[in-house]
Image (cartoon, rainbow, N blue to C red):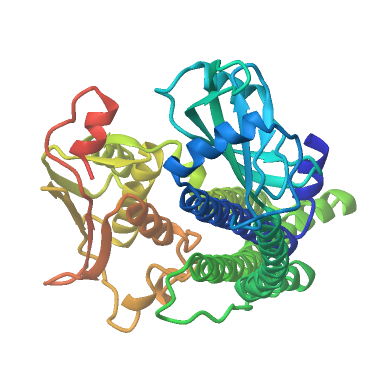
Length: 491
């Protein structure tokens, strides 16, 4: 059985569907056919039983039963008289003696059930049964107890039963013809169901064939532009699967495009510090090889340049690693974070980088769900930009209220033409290209805030400078200790 099941599972879906449909129809047809046959059989037997009842004439049969016992014979007489020509009449006494009436067409084989019925007495009613005659032909028998017969020679009275029977040849012929007809109809129905199941399976699985071809095409060519046509109003499982596939390939294509763009942009940005490093190292190496020392001031400047380029390269690599992390890696570290504490930590670092600046802060508590390190890095990037573009002795205003963080500097600001590009990867304004940085800071800020469910904007401030605004969902009070409660308290 297990081998058959394993073999069935290896068949194509079309074949399995066709076989299942055919099996279901075969079961249904078989159940209906068998039920129909038994119903017809019951009706035909009822008709025969009614014919047996019509053959009864109790007052006349009583006398004929006694006469039959007095002139007992075990076979039918050739003189039918006025009796029906297809009916069996036979008397059975309580001692098992069987006598055929003169007008009977034949003798019926007596069974133990007949004698038991006689012994139960006159209270017993007639019983119908199937039996055979002396020639072995099938008959329908009605056994009627309650008769008494008198032996003329001994004047002894005994209980007896009358057996009336009709042949079942025509009834069985009708049932056999019906069985053959039902068998033929069932066979045609099963074959037709199998063909219909195969046709339905082919029609129903046609979208899956297209999906399979599309998947194979993507696997073979890595062409993610393939789309499966889906009707707009279709809501079946295949349509949902096709839409999911189209959505998946669109996401993969977008991810692949962003990956290619990131690689191209990263290669371009890495080329500059690497070229500068290579030039400075070659100068130092040539000085050592030729024995011509570089002046101390120039050597110091070269080493400082190398150090600065290494720092920039390390920062760029760190930013690239941050951007390349998958969503799953971020999701594993998401937790409830105090935005106030993250801003305070970022302020301490910003004051170290810009000791000549005045940084004012007004912070109120706010709790949100985010990755702690990524959120603090985003706030640090915003403050670093404010410090970088603030003039010497300038002021940076930081304010956190109701989940909205604003960082305003008093630097040169950003032109209206440049604002749409500030969150693009590696984008740097013409005025900032001489300053240190990778051009990825604000891109990282935008991604971190969006992943936390918030928004970030950058705009020109009234009176000059730039104002950065970060809005994050959350609550002003920390959630309970229960993580499930915490999840329901904070968006």
